[in-house]
Image 1 (cartoon, rainbow, N blue to C red):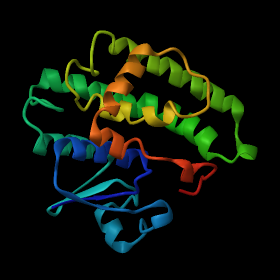
Image 2 (image 1 turned 135 degrees about the vertical axis):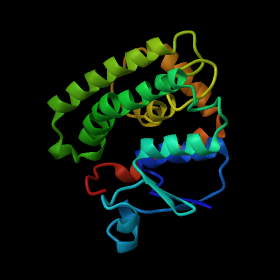
Image 3 (image 1 turned 90 degrees about the vertical axis):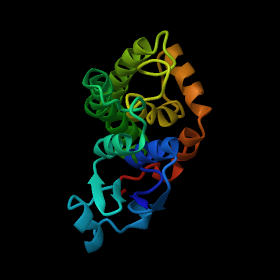
Image 4 (image 1 turned 45 degrees about the horizontal axis):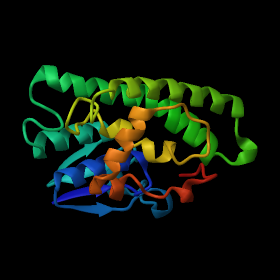
Length: 216
């Protein structure tokens, strides 16, 4: 049995749970972190000494870090031609967008905008820094919009690991009351993703509990 650890409102946990849902893997989800606590418990630190979620335990195979987990799950449970192909040329196309999402888009939006504006109490916000991060996010998503031109998903007609880390941002990004550029291809992509039950269940999760909260 696959066990997934992390709270439902955790962005990185949502990436993992979305893929678990797409793959239809039988699993158990254990809420940890935030109001659930447990990250400093010895048994959890034995799995991940960094004390962070998500973590998976797949019949005693322990994997932490969200993108490592995504690659593991795709390699083990997806068919050869889906999500993360065995062909190195095709795999690299997914890898580059996954890594770009983690090193460029996620710091700009999730850290700079979502943490800097939504999760920071109003009196503590650095609006100059938030505006800079919002502009960076807009530039990044314009690249995504260009990539999606003429495509249903990031790499073509099928959902892949190139989509998951990027598209997990969209529910929060499109539901914050902040200015956004015109992104017609991204918006069509988002509408397409909302038709997928795994996306709705695991990514379109209310995040009100995080408003003004820097403590988890």
